[in-house]
Image (cartoon, rainbow, N blue to C red; front, side, top):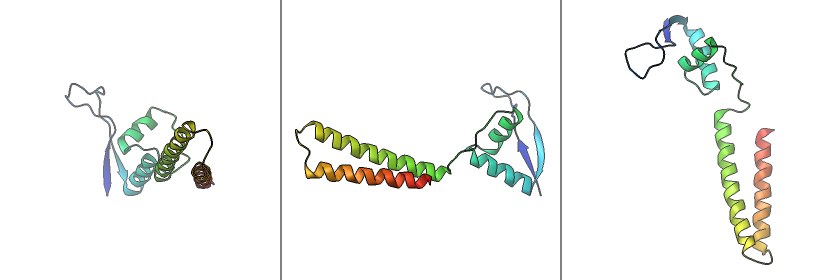
Length: 118
């Protein structure tokens, strides 16, 4: 089984910047490998192939996309909690037991996030 990979398109649409088209045939194994590499970099196959042809340096991500999304979500949640505690602390003179517990919870959340990197 062969696949045709269209890297650059050159159709008549006015908003296209590429004026030439390149078609190549790949085996199933070659295409799957190319698709894995493209997915790893968050690109589709034609975008990845075009960047490789142009020798664009692409760093391999340190984290899987799903792990990165999970970390962003947790960081956002922890940041919101920190802002709520800070706003409450700024409106009072002495921290209450609630403030101390909230700060401990935030510290635990940060420890959990660090464990995701380990």
